[in-house]
Length: 218
Length: 366
Image 1 (cartoon, helix red, strand yellow):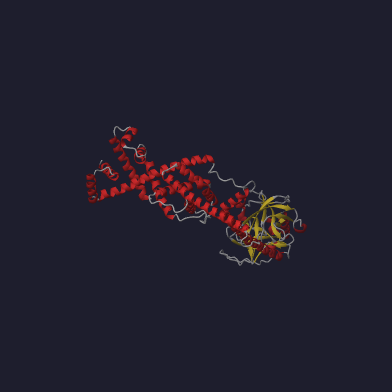
Image 2: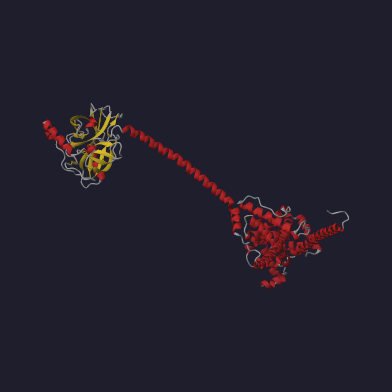
């Protein structure tokens, strides 16, 4: 029996309270740590920093792989899905009005889950009841946005594949690598920058034609 | 060139390389010319798309590099599954296929079962009917192969009313036929019809119930004497296993049959007949049994209703005995001359039948 005022009881109470406080503090610290880490990771991601990408892979990939494998997928499926989710996250991190309302982990999981669900539906092989072990957030908007961007990406890739060389390299050097015309003229062997410029515009007109022809079909 | 110039101008406008004056002029042009305006919008969109493409492409490149690094660490290895987990995984992956396969298998087995039940039932029913038939027949072990109460339309004159039907064949071109005694026993008026459909009125000349044979004579002016018959009649006994064929009228049409001599005596040890293995039906009575040389070796008389394919035939030498008796009794029939030579020897079976069939008659009467 414990009586009031018993020094042993007080001692116990003190220790229990201390333990509880410490636990709370630790959770808090960890939470703060996570948020800080996430933000620095996203910043790195927006800058195409390989270390950040690798860290995100290490922290999240195994969870996604387990999820895909448990839902009629293979390791390759998991890699595909995770890559796509990374692109979505990258797009989001680059957006000026960006704010992540949840942890990267939850976000990536939600995206992957949604993407995998969609793929299963396309295969119409299995029922779309996918078991969910983690918390999810609504990501429909992002997925829709991503699909649009992905669609444009594929069309552009296709059009660039069609125009052939040296147009492809020429446009790549100017528009993607942002080199100036003088540099390009030297690299490609044009007599002067104006010639290179004229050639570049010719290529651009062709690329635009190809791109918009496909774009209208799609 | 104009396109390029315009494009260059648009790009300069978009990148902000234009001087303030130029911008004013160009914006004025945009307002006036909808095509130029459209082009600016389109190019803006296109350049944005190209830019995005480049950004994503370089990001994907980084992703691949990171992945290649991590790949060596084994992060993408599939987890090793224990056997129990493998079974569970396999089950999860293929449970739908299994369900479909199982339901198809179930459906097929049910279908097969259903079909089997239906057909087995049918078969046993048939068998049952057969048994009833046999029971009726067992009253007489040897049933006479006579087709009773046949009602058939007859186009030819003399249009006889037909109650019974059997088979007969010529033994003399002058119109003498041999058939079974039981075929004509109940007939008051006898007619014969050949395969050409000609009817001839016929009279009984001689009957011997012991050997169940009868000799008929066609008494019809329409009948033309046949100078020679293609077959002969064998005097000697046939050997066991001798192959033969038969012609007869179990139907309205002549029917061919094939068999072999299976015993030298007939029913109940009757030495005047053979036991044959051949298919015979009511109507075959009196039909010739011809060996491969074209010799008549017997006359079909009866069949065992209990045993399958057991048919009895009077031996052909009985015909000679009968003729001898007939000639003794009445010298009018001295002139009956049976064919001695066969010209069917060595012919194909179909040729033999073709040559013979017109001398095999349907014996009908009322």
